[in-house]
Length: 214
Image (cartoon, rainbow, N blue to C red; front, side, top):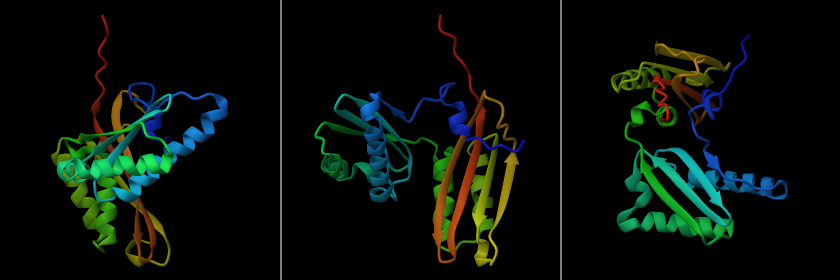
């Protein structure tokens, strides 16, 4: 009892696809994983304000394809594609590879994406907005966008309290143990003057409709 499982990892391979899709022999596996981590760290650093919800990495031989899911694709692409060209050149320099492809996909409903909700709350906390106000505002916006349920949990020195604690709010239902439930999960960190505050978000979008192949 009480064991916590990441909702994304729990559903990966059932109907959610892997975020990194490649194969490597045992001798090169570690280097490939470190390369993935380096790519994600670079994106997190250089595209902090581009509302990156998800990063997918595909590799085939020496070819690397990076798919960015963003709530603000215009920021990633830039005027005339200038920003994405600079991003491609930066990856080529850091990874020492020339055959790197970068594509951007727009997140149609940012209010239903758990990662973007968590990042939005983190930004508000860093601007010294009350954590209760930030949580309630995000809950209301997510439910208005069509979610069946949403849960937000915040942990740390809330409002500068001496002792760290956790608080959470929930609207609707969040059936975490039901595999067919399409639940999106995301987390973010807010770096405040009192320390780091962690945010976790669960969004229940609806049941996954399995389509049988004929």
